[in-house]
Image (cartoon, rainbow, N blue to C red; front, side, top):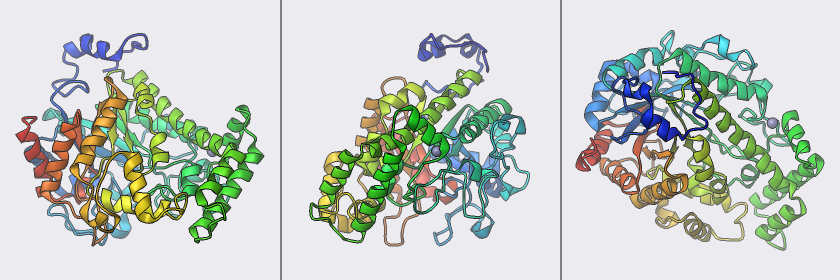
Length: 501
Ligand SMILES: [Zn+2]
C-alpha cells in the first residue's frame, strides 16, 4: 500500500481518484475512505471477539446493521472503549454474561513492536487482560475476507487507576499548578508525542489496518478550572500543564510565566469560592471577566495547552500519511463539544479539516440528556453562578443552537434526534468537502438507573437524523460489549429503509 511518493503538492482527493494503486485494486475490494456506500461502523473491543468468536461477531454485525467498518479498540487504559460491560450496569443479551470487574488493566490489545518506541520513556505495554491474544492480527484478515474495513481505534488514556498506568507515565505526566494531580500526559512533552507517533507507526507498519482513529477527551486549564464539562474522564478539573516544556514554550511566545501562575491561582480561588456559593459583590461573571482582563495570561495559557494538542493531531496525521498515503486517519471529538461553548470554540472543524480525513463527532443524544444536566449543574456552580440552573440551560440551548426539554426531566428524556441532525449539519458545513463526518451514535452507553436507557426506536431515529443532516456514515458507539442486539438491529432497519445497505 505504501506508494513511497509524496502527495503534498497534489490534492489528496485527486490523488485518490487517479491513483493507479487504487485502480489496480490495491484495496482488494475493501472500502476506500472516500467512496460510497456510506461508512457503517461500530466500536468493538478485543474481549468481544474472545468471548463470542470472531466469525460470529462479524456475521452478526453484518447481518444486523450492514456494518462495513470495525473500529477496533486497540489501545487504551480506560474501560469506556475496552473491556466488558461496566459493573452495576445490566449485562447485554450477548457475550460472556459476566463483568470483568477487578481484572481490567488495559494497554495495547495488539502486539507492541519495541522498535517504534525508542524515543519515548513510555513503555508500549501489551494489555495483559486477554493473554497473548492480538486483536488486530486476529480480526483484520477475517474482516478483509468479508470486504470489511478495519480502523485501529485508540485514545489519550494512559492511566487507569493510581496503580495501573502505562509504564513511564510519570515521566510524561502533566504538571499541575495546584490541586489534584493530572490523570493525563502532557501533549507537549516529547515523550508523549513520540509515544503516539510510535503507535501510529506500529499499527500502520505491523498490521494491514485500513486507517486509524485517535481520541482525546480532555480540555485545557481554563475549562478545567471553570468545570465547564459533564462528568467522565476529562472532568478532572486539573490545573495543568505547567511542566518545564510548557513553561519554555510560553517564554518563547513572550508569555510571562509568573503572571500566568498568579492569574490561575486567583482563578482557582475564585472557582473554589464560587462553588461554595460565595458570590463576590460584583457577581460571579463580572469578577471572572475582571480576572481575565487583568491576567490575559490565563487565556494565553489556555491557547498554549490547545496548541500542543493540535500539534499532536497534525504530527500524527503527517506521520500516518508519510507511511501510508492512501489510508485514513481521523479523530473522535469529545461530547463536551455539545455542552460547553468554551470547549466548542476550541473544536474548529475548519481547522481540523486541514489534518483530518474524517471526524467522528460524538452526538450521543440518548445519554446526552443526563450529561447536559451534569454540565448545567457544574457550570451553574461556576461561571454561570449568577443565573439559575434553568437559565443556565436556556443560555446553553441558545448559544449551542439546539434544544431539548426542561432541566427536571432532561436525564430521563434524553436529547431529541433533531439535535443529531443539527450537529451533523454543523459539522459537515464546518469541515468542508474533504473531511468525512461520521457522527457517533450512542447505543446503551451506561447511565444512572433513573436516566434514559436506549430503546430500538431511539437508535432508528438517531441514525435517520444523522443521515438527514448529511453524514457520510455513522459510528455506533461506544463498545459492542455493552450494546443490546435489538438496538444494533434498529440501526440496520433505518439504513435499510434509506436504501443505504
Ligand atoms: Zn506540559
